[in-house]
Image (cartoon, rainbow, N blue to C red):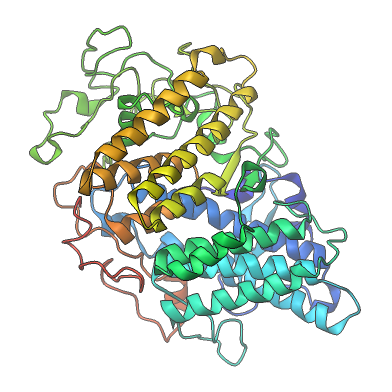
Length: 563
């Protein structure tokens, strides 16, 4: 699990100064370590809400990416690889608290959750003369999005009894009713922010205290939720109003820095890959092979190759690399029948990653495997130098965690479009916005030769080719092409990929699991185990086949068809 607390902005330290304590296991009850409402600083409470929310986005983006082959998933058996602890920290941060260290400072503290701090902010706002409309509006926005996501990933969530001392063991509410509650929270947040309340001394990690930008985000969160529920009328009404995320200037993202110590505020992928002993993360063979095959202009920004050959594959110069059992054990293995037509082990041109479900041990390949690139982690731009990773190189980790970008919204409009021609146009605009943003990150790597990358003419040719192929296709082929490009665009911010895959079953071109029979594809994850242990009203599920209310497709294992 990515840990935002170890890789976050220096301002985040403030919220731990007031809540340092030992680790405490909690469910939905208010933390005994919380400050009393009349002794709490509203600015620190808002900081804590943003920290918890940001940490959850990192976790959910990682899960979404791994489920959909955008990132590497290491489990051959889905049920065993996704235990009840998978969503523990997301759940606890949403409601009450979770513990974590802060960089290398040696300070351990309770990260108080979104709902707990929101309730305290609302109490202070009601009981004092302070105008905390901004604080409460932001808190309600982030809490609402969190509730949508809990339903998307678990199928149900606590709301009606959550945070109420009369219900120490709250029951879970159905997904549809929690969605309704989250929409109401967004309405309340918008009403508060529409008055343009003062941000005061609050640190707004995302929009610098700009209420108008937060209202754009509120409408955009509504859009993503209407895509899932299929509410085209409500979706189109927001689009007609025009007040949503439409450009890179509106993008909802978390910015990282370059500090390695006290705290380490670099992008977590950079911190994991750019070390003295080499890279830790395996990139997805499926995604790298897809982008190589289409000569996608973004691939040199997404991935940094440390080698020009992968064992058992074709090298950059066209020669064939010998298998190497020590560094890539599967390079000596004959692909199993269920991998017919898919890249099994080795991707050409030095793209050195792993395939979905490969649970082989970790060989000494830290200076061979393909590392995170300059987007979004602010690593190195791949200019065919085939150097190695290391501390401080590339962009130093000053990247972003994408949450909702304008390019995503264009794809959502394509999903909801009523005609093929309209969808084609949104495919084009989504690609244009994505590639433009990704290429802007090249400037972070001051030592790179950016001329190796695609120029304007090459970008135009790529987009024209994708759109032409889409227009010429039909049926599954057309749906697959659209979905593939959506997934490529979601790289780094993959939370919605898992939703789209369960909503539509596309793309059907994703590689299979390494294991021929990995069990049914997870339609939702297990109820967080910590909550099950602490709440006598809950019983853990015995499988991963429970479907979200908006997932009306056939039950597992028949759906998704690629699994």
